[in-house]
Length: 174
Image (cartoon, rainbow, N blue to C red):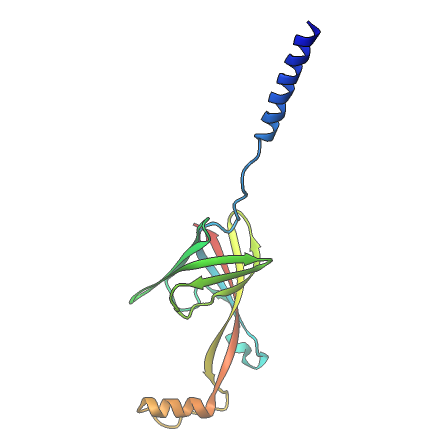
């Protein structure tokens, strides 16, 4: 009788042990996975001399009417920007290392691909990246009408300056 009780306790204990091991939630899903739509953009010039480009009241960066990005569980992404004359679509792979998000597009669309993750919650994603653009120096005064691409190029050669913008994107889960 004692032998049967011992066997019963061993079987019941083993079943309890296996049940406890079965409560594993599986692999965790990165909170960035999902569909996101741009809510706002903050822009600041890296060079204080060009602080007139600073803006915290924008809903786009590239004059797009909408900006959506979807991060998939298989570390691929799809990004779509809609403009009045068409869409820009981009696909590729994404990777997060620490607080750095890197997008590796299949084709170059000249969009920002390297970001610092500032915040990711169930509803919001804030990321910051940098982009370069060319601007004319403040001492440029246009005297005549620009009549050709060659004239435009020569003006940029003389008065142009590459500027770095620091851009913070706030997305809302779609």
